[in-house]
Image (tube, rainbow, N blue to C red; front, side):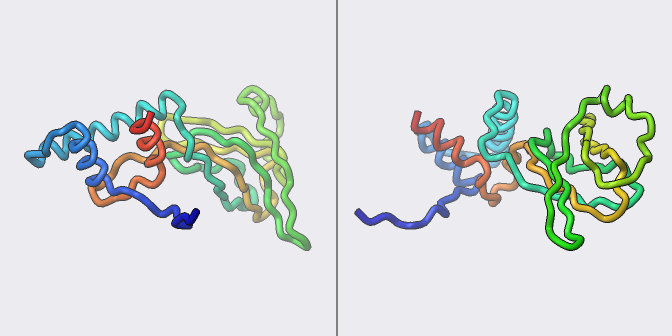
Length: 175
């Protein structure tokens, strides 16, 4: 049995809205219908994120570290760090495990300005952007490589593709 061999099917926001209206057996009559439908998509995505339906939101990311800097602002879409390493390329390429510590453990470190290769991190999640604290403070240029749990993207413009959450829609349509 032959298959297509591709997995590039994707819908733009306006195509999802049009399909939803067709499935309901109605026609979109005005620009307000489209505006309302896009708002509903964004509300639905927020609800899914609140319910923990985050199947496509784990991303491998990196943050370049500089010497004598102990804290770094990370992207605002980051919810949490799942695993992390310090990536070094001095003589050979090496990944050094970095352990997560709690706020209390970080607070109790007496000399946070000690420098070396970081082996511990604390993630402070604020209201807008998370801050990464490292211990010891990096003694030079390193790369913090981590798998981050990120927010589901919103619907955006009508011609944007829905790659990151189109699978969720397909699951709901066919269940």
